Image (spheres, rainbow, N blue to C red):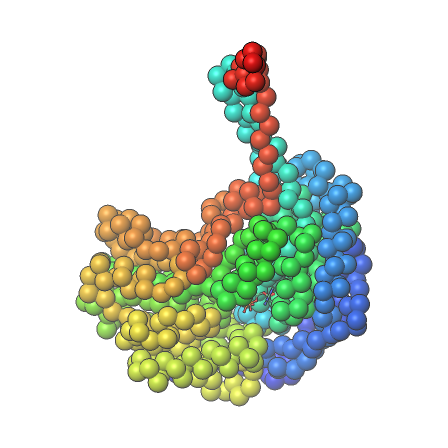
Length: 510
Ligand code: NAD
């Protein structure tokens, strides 16, 4: 039985103070409608009712934004500013985000259905992203290479130009900051295309940017449908690089389109990450981490540990304890502090995740917790924490990213089978390993196909470390200097320090 946070229906559908009823593009320092007047309706995930209209960008709006960004890049002060000057602006931005954290978290929760305590955490992370990249850029230097006494080479690092940033609907503001911070720190101008289901928190960015001192034209937003506004940004010849976070299928479409202009690409895509629990693990810690890892952020988390692989000797007991805890997870009003799982982002996504629950049952997996709408929550996109045991690799719920509060548990016999199962998907984003045998821990960490491994450790990120996946989970890494490398291009200047000795072609007498 799930327990729920009681909530008045009126409270559930009331937008927080200050939520706009019209969200416009932000181009060259001005809030503007689409050139053709196009708009789309925006709903909340609890009431599933329209609360705002959003400008629906077309190729013409993208053109306008890219032109402004390009002008700011080639003529404005941002790309020419010292790293220290940019760092000061980004630090101010971090402080302004911290000062607006309550409003930001409230908007995010209302628009996405993320539990408010977790939205507050994401707002703090967004501020930290700007603060971190401010510090990083201020401390960065360019390399010099001396070749004996004969030659000196030095590197000039320049911002690439107008960066196209395309973001998904899970933790929207945090993910936008994860791209904006390094792009701006590097000196690029940007055009951000937020996800169409969750543009609300991004509507706070223009005022924050203006107050922090980001010059007009450096930061632009074009809202709209991915296949229209996003596609136009990817296809635009004056946008030399695209940083994309979203689904693997969308990533493939973007890579094809970007190939025409040989764009720089950073692709952060889907995941189906394993949690491998050996019998000798600290089971209490593994259990806490596995539960939080898949059910936090409503399970709408790219690094969710959505396949839990458990050594057969502890399997039954683990499944029982996991299911008991999952059944007690509080599902309800995202705006209440006690809520652990809120509402899934959109009715369409709710239907998709619910369909996976049906698929799991039809495939013969054993449903041990959840499986449907919690009692007492008759409307809204609410799904109880759902746990399937005895899941086999042939099942779709083992292979496909569900991106909701649904987890698979599978037994394994030994280390070799654990690694085989962990790697038996097309994805390779994160993995989590629990064992007190450190030699085995390091062996398995090396053997799993994933961009990121946490060994006896919860999903905690050090912003300096590379972030990204392999296989169908992505191409390229962001994080720390990896992000700055992406948004800058390095030029090497070679200088001779003495006489130049060159084979003298054509110097022999005829
Ligand atoms: P999505 O691919 O549907 O959309 C992401 C963004 O791309 C949106 O802004 C959308 O409008 C835009 N878009 C859609 N079609 C486009 C096109 N043809 N051209 C250009 N842009 C287009 O993804 P989503 O459903 O918003 O997000 C969920 C997915 O994101 C999951 O697969 C999740 O794993 C992934 N994700 C990955 C990471 C990571 O770091 N690896 C982080 C968060 C989310």
